Amino acid sequence: MQKKHRNKILEEAEKIYSELYNTQFNNYQIYNSLFQFQLKLKKYAEAKKIVEHQIQISNNKVNLYGDLGSVYFLMGDEKLAAQTWNDALKLEPENPFAFRTI
Image 1 (cartoon, rainbow, N blue to C red):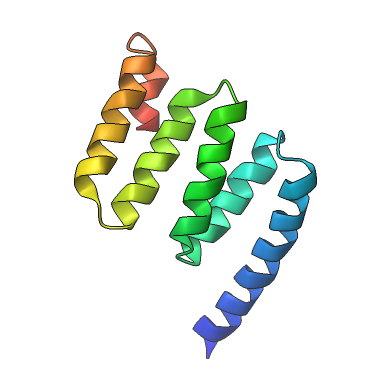
Image 2 (tube, helix red, strand yellow):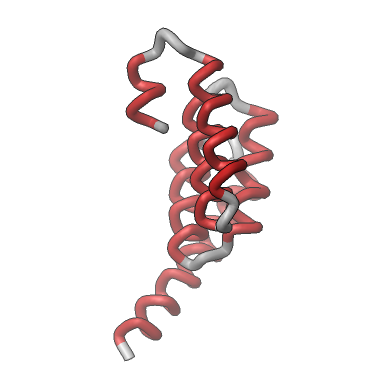
């Protein structure tokens, strides 16, 4: 019963953040919150879509490729996840935070 109630709350929050994202997609906090809700709800295809959108519009590529790799991993594609994480590290090889992010 608690899990069902928790999922209902997560669904409601995800809906609110999705609406916010549609009007404020440049806001990283809104993106990240929506992304986290989608992962918790196992909406991996939706999460992948917003990550790919963020990669197109943002300069925060290392974090975003890290997110994309996580989505691939959760979708069961470990090979593509590892390749994506490696690509992220190549973007900023001298950035010590890149290794922590990935």
